Picture (cartoon, rainbow, N blue to C red):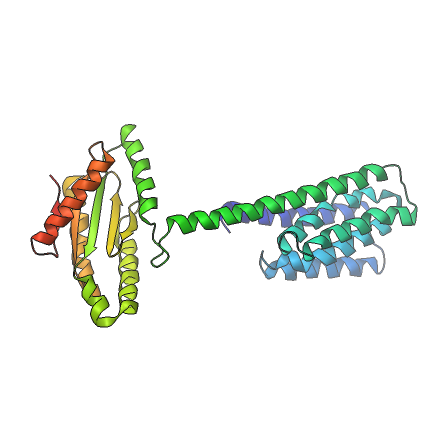
Length: 311
């Protein structure tokens, strides 16, 4: 859960506590009613301790039973407790998959609470508004769950489309998109950036002599090394095969060469060497790719395990 989500999560708990405090202040419990409140508070604290993924399922039925109890306890003032009924639908939406039988438990409790004033024949003046509002709120919660489901699917496929499944790094398409964004920043006045292409030397021998499993493991180790040893703000991606790419924002010339040289020396600790080609953006992304590739080819041609810069 991100920072904003945590704020909203704890705000919901604070709202629940405040609502309970207002209800107790307006209608002080008597006798055994105090025990009901104590049990509810203890259960809520226990549910909260289980974390945001488990808490909604633990709270759904106790909250429904509590609201029914509260409607009965306050008599003609039952509409005040009705303000909290939408929380049931939201809890069901977070506790169970959309469109599942479990999700319909929110509708069950909503139906019970809508029928309760009719059964008890208590202050039915505002009941039609209450009943219609529950139908609308339940339907909106269903739509919210559907949008949440679709958003999750879109996020999954977007991540799959832009991520290398083996190394977890951004793939070539993701890198191209990042380069396009960086080029747009340069056009707005930012300093030029550099592209570094890295090719692992003699990687085919690793696959041939040790097997593809060991080759894949080495690729993962290289990916982890690169992510851990680039500067903050730099981007590492898998260019394809045994090639990786580094996007170095606001980096030119010698500084880019220094980064590449540090990477080259560090790779030896993993038991492999690499050849690197460096190119600085000069206004044309296609030209940048070509120059970085030529520099990489030159590093290979001059004996591998070296860094070359495109002039």
